[in-house]
Image 1 (cartoon, rainbow, N blue to C red):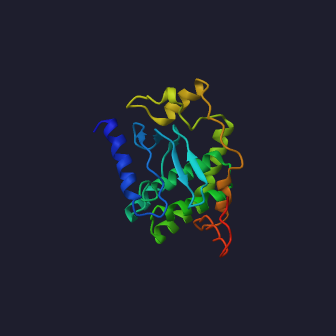
Image 2 (cartoon, one colour):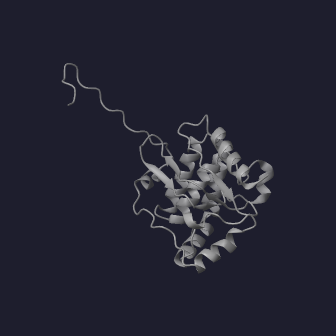
Image 3 (cartoon, rainbow, N blue to C red):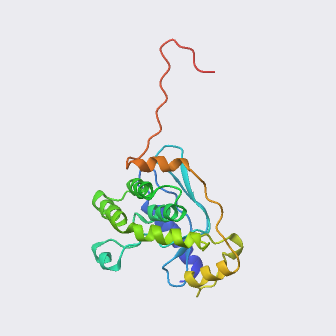
Length: 215
C-alpha cells in the first residue's frame, strides 16, 4: 500500500468512527513516518468543545503518536488507535503546548472521548492511565520544548521520504533551525478542563410575552 492510500484510508476511518458521537472531532488527514509510530497532520484538526463555540486547533504539521498505551494492554482492546484516537491527538497537543494545566488537559481528553463515542469503561481506563503515567510525558515535553526541539513540521518540510523516522527527521529540522510556531497563551478552552462535563452553550432566554423582539 502506498503512502497516499494510507493517507486517504486514515481519514475515512476517523470519519466513520465518529459518526455517532455527540460533537465529533472532524477527521484530518495524517501521514505516517516509516515505522508508523508517529504521524503528522496534513491539515488543521479543529475540535469544538461541546457546543461552547470554543475551538481547539491542532495545527497542520503537528506530530502525534496517538494514545501512548503500553503494548501489554493492547490484547485487552486498548491500543494506540481506537475511537479515542482523535481525542488522543488533541491531548498530545495539549501536553506539548502546556498552555493548560496537566489536569485540565486530562479532563479535556475525557470530554473529547465522551464526544467521540468511547464507552464509559474504556474512557475511564484511558483517563486513569494518563492520570497515573502522564507526568513522565509532561516533564519530557517540557524539557524538549526548552531545548527548542520542534513538534510541528513546517509546510516547506512536509515532503519527507518514505523511509524517514521521526526522531531522525526531528534532529534534522532542529539542526536547520526549525522551531515551533507561537502557541496561543491563556486559551479559552482550558477552563472547560476544570471539570469533565461536556460544555453546552446556554440557550437564549425567550422574550417575555408581548415584548418587542430585539433589534
